[in-house]
Length: 292
Image (tube, rainbow, N blue to C red):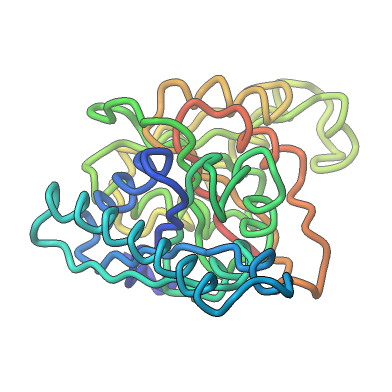
């Protein structure tokens, strides 16, 4: 569909069961859609065991074995529902964010869930999801509840500007796999944008047309061979986060972009208020696509 890196594997971060169930099922279904293998990753917390002088090597082995048992159960659940899917599993002794980042590359799609009891706890409301989404080389999908039935629902993509062409590209590719339409949403504010993006306009109507033209150019550059008639362009006034959260109630997936920040430990992990808000409040799974 385009010359951007194509997803070649789906990686799912598995915490506890059944808490990881929605992310596991979403990842398995996505692997089936894309015709690629599924890899399950679990991070075990060896910090307490390895730092304690009284901990034995046997205790460490038991902790690692419990992680392998968890992944075996998760893989069995997936295989029962998707018998033709290629599934691999790996236990990591790194801290959760590093484990997930090291398990992925530019040709991966990473799927993580919500809070659990183990190594990926507090994925949505804690630091792990923010760190992963800020530093990943690949798109990250956060699934924080059992997704609603997606039949007939669009893939919603938030478009800030022309830097979001890869975000549109990912949304269109994902929608094509589901035979779903795309809704591209762009927001603007007369107060914040006046004199900034289109300084020569002298009416709100003309400014809105400029924003629609911006959205149209970005979608056209990113849609590839996705049918133009299956894309709805929507320009609305007001805060972007509120508009995206509201629209997500009628979407199967919300796709947003986040600036590339580099690997852990090199740069900060700020994602921006819009991405942070949708990670907390969206009504459907959220895909964060690195841009820039």
